[in-house]
Image 1 (cartoon, rainbow, N blue to C red):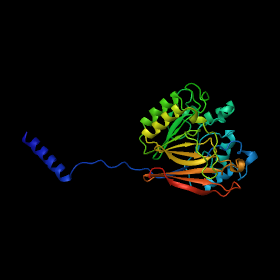
Image 2: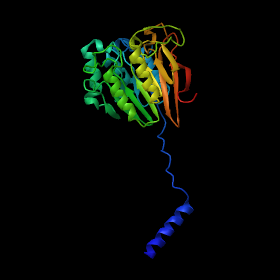
Image 3: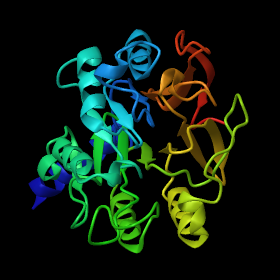
Image 4: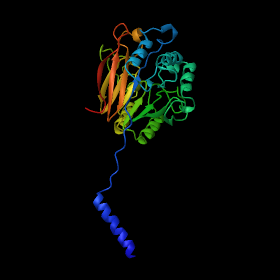
Length: 307
């Protein structure tokens, strides 16, 4: 008994000398960048193998520095032409994550191809959560470094991944709520085709699809945005409008990537976004082409987490 008390006394003395025990802060992963480009539909493939079109945006992405993957917020029809241009420019096997757009749902062959990119819900790298029944391959979450990325299919109606019309349905909302509740990454991105809020292009002021998409069902849109705010989502990334914009709305950034058609859409400059995550910060850069569809340069940049 005396020896046991002596050992206990020595242990207490050692703890007092050493001070309180503290846990080390979590180690941050290395910084990385990824690119976002969308709505290049009809301006990819052999008939448009020209730097004035989507190919030029890919060449500019390559020139802007290394990126880990490409996000496409929909409307890449026909999708096989887009993926062929990506792999020929950025490398075979380069990761591409696709959010379904309204034009992608128009043909069964397009949807079959997009589902095949993530066959079984696990073909793409770093998938951490499959989509709900009926959308296992076209709605999912993946993680890369310090980022958690959720790809939404806004055409999922609870049964079919082409049954809704630009909405965050009850089934999608429930799945997204569960996913965000379990997320522990410091930076979170949600990707979908339709903007939550239709905004004018940052350069030309053009407005398209006002009152459509998520704005057509304001109750669902507001419920969705409230969830993003409560779960501290870093940014919602979208397309559809063909107009590029970046705005913080009620505590959440909306990044509309515009279009990457080159001169295929003369109403606003062709655009891609480069996002860099790491070292406690998350920064964005909007790269836009000149009137020739060439000569991409940074026109807007900033932090998504520091006001």
